[in-house]
Image (cartoon, rainbow, N blue to C red; front, side):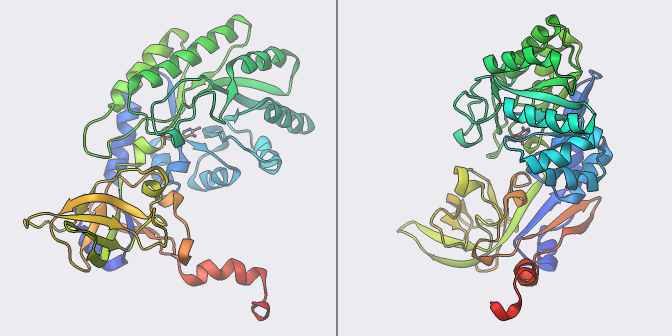
Length: 410
Ligand SMILES: Cc1ncc(COP(=O)(O)O)c(C=O)c1O
C-alpha cells in the first residue's frame, strides 16, 4: 500500500516500471527538517537534482521550500515550479559561459562559485549589465564525508569547490570588485552522509570562515552548509534529521547568521518506490535463481553505478519459504543487477516488486539506453493517485531525431 492505495492497483492501471511517490511522506520529511530549526532563521533549498518532477517541486514549493539548481535547465524547471529567482541558489562544478550569461541577469539568491575563473566570468557579465551579482564561494574544506567515494565531494582530491587557501586569496581581492557581492560561504561535502561528525565539521568550518570574513570587514548574509544528509536504505536507523539540524544550528548560532541547507535525498528518497514486474526466471546456481524484472539500470542507476543497496519487497506478501534470487534488470550490461542475493518468497512471472527508497536519484538519473522509454511516475496524495509524468513513447524518443533529419535521409 502507499498511503491507503493498493500498489497493485496502480501498477495494473499504469503498467511497470513505475515510480510511485507518497505526498504525505514528502510533507513529513520536509517538515522534520524545517521544524528542527525551532525558530532559528533558515531556508531549505531543496536540491532539484535528486528529483525534479514538476509535481514534486510544486508540492515542496507550496510547503515553503526554496530551490538548489545545478544547471540553467534546472533553474528553468524551478521557475516553472513557481520558485522566484530570489529563492534559487545556482550550484554546480561546471557552469558554461552560456549558462552564466543567462543566470546572472536573473538576480538569483546566489551563484555558488566553484573557482576564481568562474568568479571572474560572473563579474564580467555583471559589469556589462551594470548590476552587481550575488555570489557565494563554495570552499572545499578537505573533510571526509565517509560516504561512497563517488558521492564524496569535500576532500582536496575532489573536483569541487575552491581550496581553503585559494579562497582566502580570492576573498582578499573582493573589496576592489564592485560588481561582486559576496553573500555567503558554501560547503557541500557529499551525499548519503550518515555520520554526524563530518556534517558538524563542515558547519564549524563555514562558521570559522564567516568569522574571518567578518573580521576583514566582509559581513555575510547567511551560511550555506549544503545537502548530504543520508537515509536508511536497509531499514537500520541512521542519523535523525533533527539531530543533524540541531548540530548545525548549535555550530552556527554564535554567528547569528541564517542557515541555508540544500537537502535532496533526505526529503525525497524515502518517499518513492520503483515498481517492477518479474518478466523471466531462470536457474543461476544450485541455490539461487535469476529473477529478471522490467526495471533496471535505465530506471534506477544507483545499484549499477555505486553498488547501492535498495530493499526489494514483494508487493503481495506470501507466507511461503523464502528462496534466493539475483534480481536483475533487462539491460544488456552485467552490471545491471538491481539486488544481489535476495531472499524472497518464491516468485512467479508477473509478480510485482517494490524497490524501496528510490525517490532520490532514481527517475532523475533514468536513461533511454537500449531505447527503453523513461518510466511513468505517480504521486499518491490523500488516498488518490495522479500520473505526474506519463510513460515516454517511441514517438517521444524519436521526435528529436526526426526533427533534426528528414525521414528520407534516415
Ligand atoms: C551542491 C549540492 N547541494 C546539495 C546536494 C544534495 O545532496 P543530498 O541529496 O545528498 O542532500 C548535492 C548533491 O550531491 C550537491 O552537489
